[in-house]
Structure formats: structure tokens, C-alpha cells
Amino acid sequence: MINFNGTLTENPQFTAYNRGMLYGDAVFETIRYTGGKLTFWEDHYFRLMASMRILRMEIPMHFTLENLEEELLKVIEAETFQNKAASIRLTVTRNEGGKYLPEDNGVGFYAFAKELKNPFFILNEESYEVELYKDHYVNADLISTLKTANKIIHVTGSIYAEENDYANCLLLNNNKAVVEALNGNLFLVKGNVIKTPSLEDGCLRGIIRKQLIEMLKKLEDYTVEEASISPFELQKADELFITNAIVGIQPITKYRKKTYTNKVAKDLLGKLNAQARLAK
Image (cartoon, rainbow, N blue to C red; front, side, top):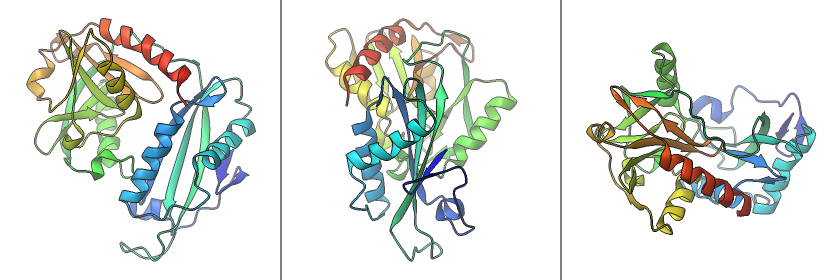
């Protein structure tokens, strides 16, 4: 069941002139639902609003925190996921009309949900090997930090990973710095220092990234840095892990000849679950 501009339907009526389809002129959020609420919903909402402003989309008066939450919960109820865990994708597209230059900066939205197996973030300790994806590069700019519908580098990178039996790939920016994974932000652990690429490098402004940085700043056991990561640092690290809103924290077990532990990832995952239960 899909919520298409406030109406629940199994067959939303998209036309050939949909700007998300024609130009990738859309932004989206993928949100975890568990325990009867949208996890880190306020962070998702404000990131969505910021993205729409940056892309010069007009924000409707009814796109309030409460109203959009209600629209997403309609999908949960329609799918009878109220007592289950689910992921919800909310996509906002600019209205039809125009070519590169829009005729209308107003927006519409649609949302759908998929059931998840686990109500909490669970640490996956199975083999998880990654490699660099170097066919295309992420631009180190503001647009790259947004969750737009233009993710062709991530699509081709995912195909490359599957063809070469990797669980994931790490993306580089045009300065040859490591930016992120195909499906989330990257964190590197060396001793008690935890490092993640800065937004200036073009990495996604991730929700779990934000939560972990805020958490780490309050912990005496770790020092957190937002700074560029070179490919050479990867093999010197004690741990590497990926974060996103659905999985939480995914440890990397191998990159080339280097294998990694997951002690810090395991410690942080417990804290992240506790933070998720308390967050709005």
C-alpha cells in the first residue's frame, strides 16, 4: 500500500512527466519504524526540509512535523505493521512541468513501507568484505550530502560489488579521499580515535552519523574526528564500520589483505539502541 499525496492506494498514478523520473528531481528519507514510533523522526524531518530548501523546492504549509508523521503512520497501519518493525521510504518530487528549468516548484510525495525482521539494531558478525569503487567519483560539494533520487554512482557501484563478490564498496570523491559506503556513512577506528569523513568531502549527511558523533563527543573513552580519510588509512585501522538508519552499524570484516575486529562497533551499537528508544 502506498500513500500517494495523502491517499492510500495500491496503484499510484505517476505520469511520463514525473520530474523524479525525468531528472532525478526528488529527495527522499528512509526511516525505521519500531516500538510504535518513527526512529529519529525529528532528525529525518529536518534533514528533509533542509534538502528541499537547498534544491529550491516550495515547502507546503501542511508539511509539518506532525502532519508528515501522520501520513507515514497511515502506511504502517494500512500494512498492519503497528506491532512490527518496518522501513519507510518517503519520497518528495517536484511537480511536473518544464525541462531543466521547472515550471512549478511545488511538490508532491509518496511513501511505502517494508517489514523488517528485527525490532532493534542487531550486529551482523558475518563476513563483510569491501573494496574501493573507482569507476566514478563523488563530487566534494553540498549536493552530494543530500539524499536525492540521483544515485547512479551508488547503483553502478552496487552492481560492481555483486559482480565481484563484495558485500559493499567504498566511494571516493574527486580528491581521491574515501567518502562513504554505497549504503551509508563510514567510520574508521584507530586506538581510541574514531574518524569519519567530513561533510566538506561530500559524504551523506547521515542520521546515524549525526547520532554517533553526538554520542561520541559525550564519551570519555573515545575521541571523534570529522576529517578526510585516505585509502592508505584503511589498512592501518583497527576497525571499519558503516552506518545507516535501517541497519544501524555494520562492521566491515575485510578490506584487501586486512581483517578487522568489531569491539567498538559492538559497544556503540548497544548505546545506539538505547538512544533510539529515547529519541523523538
